[in-house]
Length: 150
Image (cartoon, helix red, strand yellow):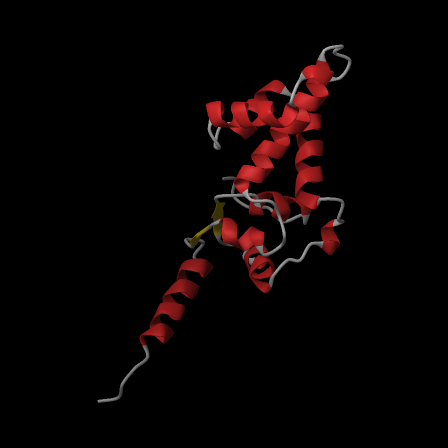
């Protein structure tokens, strides 16, 4: 009796799910970290800081505020998953997206991002639903590739 490699059948099944539009992929933060994108905490704190700095513009007492301490306090009070929602609900949408792009790109053009082969393979999988714990969907949207929202 020949010994068969179970991976061959696993790959066939994955391919079948993909071709039928039934493949669902969940990726975590590690994938985006390889592209030198900020982790979720740094991204949310950055959004809070930009929002607070903008809110304090023109305030005569702004120089008395320790912005970094205020960001930490607010971040800890809201929790890491609610910080971006707080800014989203408080800031003008165009400011939110401008700040998000600045924090993610960090002055780099999209073509300068260190996207891995995994990023490119996921972006090319137009029949699969992609769910992320981070910002990969944002990167796909910037590249003109439609993916399922988080």
